[in-house]
Length: 421
Ligand SMILES: *Cc1c(COP(=O)(O)O)cnc(C)c1O
Image 1: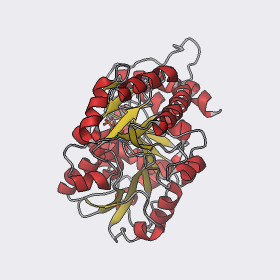
Image 2: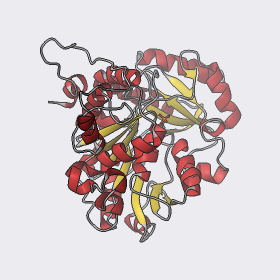
Image 3: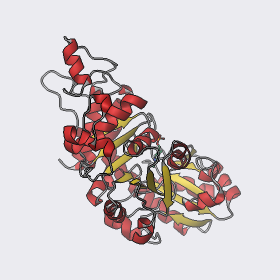
Image 4: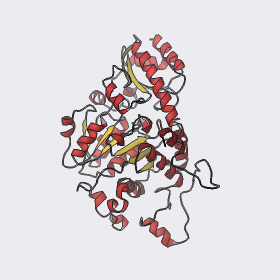
């Protein structure tokens, strides 16, 4: 099936007399006729639903759909994108370990890694998203367990060279984890460029309507964990009577452990209702991404021509330093998010935003409705100026998330707001 067909059809295939629409299984628990059968489920000897913290039929279908969209062997939904990022790393790194991470990552990811996980004993080295092969390579240490990047970064819209990061990570014997939230599998499938694990905040384009928080971790099944660096996957887990994940689950070792270990212990399970809503969003993801990208391209070109605008950053513009890389990895477009600076700085940025009428000021990004945000005073407000610059955020940066309305109306709204400056 083509990817737009997968959006609609994958993950759920009813048999005779079953509901055509994915049912919401609003149940924490599942009944069995013997304690022994149940015991086998607990010991991972048999497959089946027994408690929604570990698996639920509604979630299962949506996980299968997303794994199919990304071209992976398995996926795990989480209650938020933050939980997905946390699990993607803590599944293979513990206190004393080290992760190489791009400095251009979502503000929440940066806080999680730089503060919270650091406090728990996992060390991080942050490197520029456009680092050279040498610059990436020197960041690795003996105790490095993964490299984490964002494909198209929020909010700075850097485009990471996945092929290059994957090559360097693999040469150091560790997997590449890619946050693919902004591009979505419609525009970019990181596994095709060598990534091993993908995470998403499904709260953004995948849901697409800003109705449900969620995240997902997807496993390519391609990484060979048997190189001595990942005992948590290749040595017996006593909490499951000595199961060895790589032996028992083969190519699905990473994603199986994330579920039966991390989800069992930390929780953060997605709610069945939210998985249902996410699935509705996924059904139209291909259609929406096409419109988001077409609209954003027009808006970016309009902004670039305006004399009230100091700079525009959109990978679909020829002026972007990422134009060629974006065209190579994402020939159909990147995403609907543009960042730009109005002339004059912080104050003019606020004035412009307040003069908008169709586009609302919200924290959210990447949904059907056009919206704007000033990162320096909101999502990134806890950062110092140097940290801001390191992750590509200028003080006058406006993040414009172009929706799927008619582009004429979006441009008209922007035009009248620029005139008020
Ligand atoms: C929003 C976002 C996250 C965090 O996801 P939540 O669903 O808000 O927890 C992670 N990465 C990126 C790129 C995001 O845009």
